[in-house]
Length: 265
Image 1 (cartoon, rainbow, N blue to C red):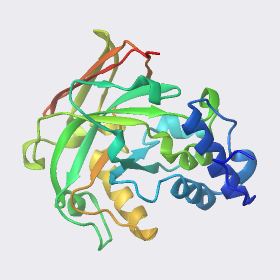
Image 2: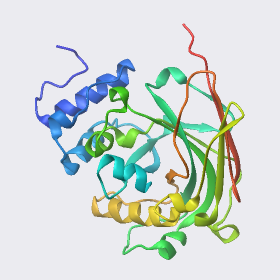
Image 3: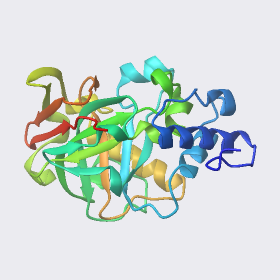
Image 4: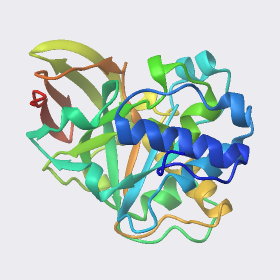
């Protein structure tokens, strides 16, 4: 028996083990929907099992905020995953490509919370009051499921396809810009590959944050002061590979850049 796999043969445990093996080997695995079906609660349980008990949690990421992507997966809601300390990189970082299976990059508005979100109901105004500042961000999404052959349950179980993320250096208060009105342009190797606006994230990044605050509270794990929240892609998501250079500009928030290091050895 593989020592990395659990002997407890429940569908949820088997799904968690399958994804853990893919993370360990960096080789994509079969979808987990054959084990857990379309059960969203089971998918989030698999997600929790995949977070190491001693991991430092920095925040959350919201996914599936685009109506087009929701339609593609046959769902009418976003999902979320957990951001860990070892996923975070500074602006202009050379990212460890060898840690990734099938990376794609997207540009986002990131909020850093200045207060807990523990008392709903939440709307755009109430969550805005809890945001300390916003920054431009790159999220590198990565599917441990081979060929991105995913349904909603698959991506939820796979920690919402979280990979790595990069935060820009300009910290901007909400009084200084309107999140839904930002415009984004992202280039790979100096060629523009993605454009979009704040309205792409559920109509407003603050709407996405309110959804997450509500969902997290319902699940008993509310958002806390200091957490980073990636609010969702502002434009199309683009595949990347070793050697690529990515830069995104978001009006009001400035630029954020990263490169993908060549794999050695």
